[in-house]
Image (cartoon, rainbow, N blue to C red; front, side):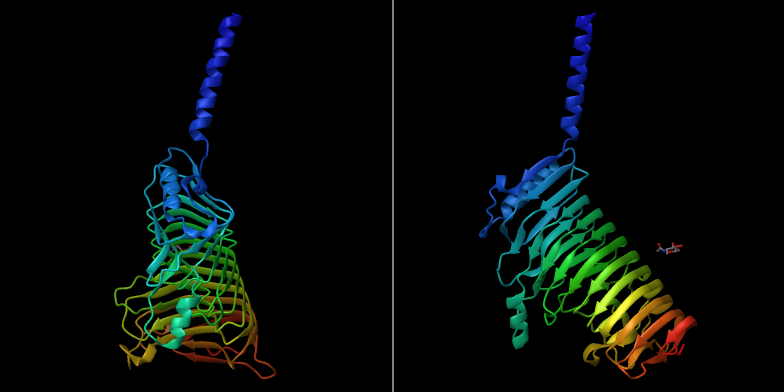
Length: 389
Ligand SMILES: *[C@@H]1O[C@H](CO)[C@@H](O)[C@H](O)[C@H]1NC(C)=O
């Protein structure tokens, strides 16, 4: 009997430990794949090696980037993966290799599911490209720092992205993305350094972000649905923008966007919707902007449907993008220009269902103003400057 008991216990121990091993989190440290934390040795191959191991792992797996600075060239982490839960834990910094002539993208995740990036810093070293652009000479195209494409169940948490040549983070064709506690930094005069760009994606949540750049804080492109933005701090930069939309005719619409609790400091715009002044099937529907503080913002509330840079490709045309159900609630603070609320909608497709509630925007010691073209909707609570819809 005693012998039988002990063999049963042994069997149980074997079963349990086998189970624990197979579901254990396999950690792939890039240093073990030859990466050097000196900021000079090319660590692209070790990083890819660790990714491939993690991706091929049957259970949950982790790619670990230890402390230190790692030089990385253009790199694409391709799925699909065997592992359905992959963590990229970054303690150190990934620094882009300064091979001028880079085009398009630096770090890309494509066709992945269940990938989380925790912590770390990525440094796009954009200064030399910005300096080139400032001279007006012909310059290389530059690269977006971090892109997620064709992916699902993604988390980006606690990441710092600095000095991207172009956009810092792009989410394209994704479903279910959580971006939390990220910090994005580039100088206020750096060109095209948008913070986070979302397009053709659904169920993206961005919370607790601090974004200081030379372009849009968060930009929202065609085909974005069910986007939630909360507790975001923007500035310097161009603010949060839905658009530009409607450059193409067959463009997908934007539906269900919420911006809840945001602070804009010294930005060009606060809450903006921007469309090209040309024919399009696009639309913007179901937007809630609430609890926003404006500090010295040039255009705190703006809809601009007459975007047409250099008057090329759209003179004398109206925007086809239909804007409806856009609610502004509890927006207050200071405008840096007299027109604090500006609805410049399309003559052929007027804005409908605009709601203004509890708005208080000031312009120094002078009264701020509202301006409306082709805008229809309702107001409630106090609205200062007085509404023109
Ligand atoms: C937008 O939200 C409404 C109300 O919650 C919902 O009925 C609709 O399906 C949503 N649209 C999309 C594209 O998910």
